[in-house]
Structures are given as structure tokens and as C-alpha cells.
Image (tube, rainbow, N blue to C red):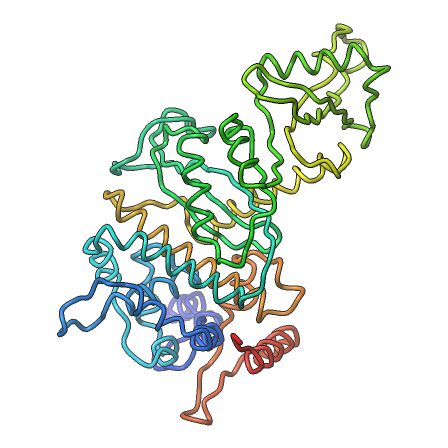
Length: 451
């Protein structure tokens, strides 16, 4: 009998099943946020919110809209993009000590976006423009704009969603988000939330004009890159009237195929230039029926994979090559350079992935379309705020990291916020990499100023 009891005791014992206490109020995985908060204070972010947001809650309200939206932006940057997850910051003692006051609950956040008036959409865009203007520091700059849209599938019943082109979930309702972003530096200029059935070219020029309005006055659009979805003669005329350089992929229309056949039939006049083993380029100056003049068309030829040995392959051009055409008004670049120039537009695809995975741009959890758009614009502000912090304060080797990587190696690293007043400091794990990064951040923040 005693032997059985001893065996039971031995089986139940493990050196890894340790007792736990819940009395530590200093450890947190949000302590690094103190440096983002310091950056926000340097640029006067809370003053920007308070001065632009016209909607005010009752004087006896615990939180005003500027404080609530500031908290929502903090949550998005830290990765708490769902309303239910925002309370994780609310119950984080280190975060509340960094902020110096209580923070709202996720219900307060949801109630605010329902209560905001229609004018708040333009006010949030104005906040975003103000951030870009502060970042510009009054310096004249020529920018290259990339335009694209993306499908955001809906898994519920949301107002404004509709069934349209959906490459992954066929037949499901969705939203379309148009995105205008600056090449190389990745500032997000504007974003819209539209019905899923809208084509890329639906309201495209209106979106381009809204992006022009959102740019700081001293930022001038030099060039635009556009995918085939917005290939339209009216768009070409508008870009030319504004003096923009444009690189636009053409749709596979009958006239484009005629130009390609014309080039192939006269290779002695239009020799192909090989870029690599797969791609070759050519060019022709031609006029489509609706056009008022001839324009430069760069033709891309892609070699298709060869069939396996023993298989019969018809000696027809369509089975050997795939063609694309790019319409442009840039004359000082070679066809090969135009090919590479347009390919740089593909970086917007990577940015869209980051916006979806890191900032939840594809999550539209509210039934009301207006609420979804409000939260989308708040995410846009959070993205640009973080992008400015990343490009200005973080070390050079981290400035091309996506937000998910930065959270993993920096923002969400646990630490202890200890001490009071002048003696308050953070205790991190003994990590040489983290020590190098934090030392750099502190020095960069000390010397940073807007003027």
C-alpha cells in the first residue's frame, strides 16, 4: 500500500511544474514603446490630433476623441489590431505608466468610431497630411507615386461589401481598397474603402486627384506607375496635362496584339534586345484608334518553359512567348530601363502585404462601412507614424524591415520598467544586439528635432 502511494507521488512530481505568483507590476513586453512615445512628443502628435478633430465628447467624459484615437494608434503599432485585443495594453502597467494616465477600453474605442461624424473622414486624412508635411520639413522633393488596389474578403455581413473579382475566395463579398504610396520611402498618401465590385479604374482619376491634395505643398509628383487595371486613355491625357512621367502597363487589347505582330513580322527593323535568358524587350511608336498622337510602347517578351523531351510542341509564337506592353512618355530611358522601372512598381505589392499582415488593412470587422473606413484611416496614420519613426530613429539596417519583424526583435521584447522620476529606466535581457539598437535609438531621439 505504501509502495503504491510512493509511486503515485513520484509520478506526479516534475521539476518543470513550478509554482506561480502574480505580483510583478514592472515586467512588460511593451516597454520599448516608451521610445515611440518620446518620438510622438517630439513631433507634437497629441496637439495635432486635438487641433484637427472637431468632434468633442461631453466635458465630463473621461476620454476625449484625441486620447482615444491616440490609444488606437498605439495599439495598431504594437500589433493589437482587433478591438478585443486592445485591452491588453489597457491592463499593461508599463504602458499605462509610460502614458501617464488611464487608457480607454476597447468598448470606448468602438463607441467612438460609431459616434464620429462624416466630416471625421477628411479630418483624419488631414492629420495624415500634417504628418507628411512635418516630415517634409519644407524641403522641395520630387516623388514617384505607385497606385494599386487590393481585394479584402469579408466573412460576415458588412454594409457596402459586394461580390466582385476575388482571386482567392470566388463568389464571396469583399471590399476594394485603392492605395497611393510614394516609391522608395513608402509614405502612404491616401487609401479608400470601396465596394468589391468596383474595377480598378472606377473613380481612379478622382483618387489620383485626392492623392495630389494629400501631398505636402513642397512635394511634387515627378512620375506615376500604374498597373493595367487603370490603363485608360483619359488617365494618359490627365498625366500628360499635369506634366507627369508615366509608366503604365497596357491591357492585352486587340490593337496591342496588332502592334506586337507588326514588330515580330519586321524583326529586321525592330530587333529584340535580350535582357536575360527569359526576357527580351522591344519598342514601337504607334497610335491606337482613340489616341490623338503616336506614343511610345515598350514590348516585353517572356520565354515560356520548354516542354519535356518527347512531347510535341507546335511551332507557333503563342506557345513559345508571352507578351506584355508598357505605354510611357519617358524618352530618356532605354526599353530595358523602362522594363526595370515598371518592375519597381511591384514593391507596392510587398507594401500591401505588410499593410494587411502588419496593420490589418484587410480586417473590416464592423457592420457599418463608415466605421470600417474610419478605422482604416486610423491604421493609415499609425502606419505613417511608424514609417517615419523607422526611417528617422531606427538604425540603418532595420529601416527595410517590415513591422512584424520589428515587433519580434524590438517592440515586443520583454523588459522591466523600474525606478521613479529621473531614476526610471528599463531593464532588458542581456542581449548585445538589443543593447546596440537601444543605444542607437536613444542617441537618435536626443538629436532629433523638426526644425
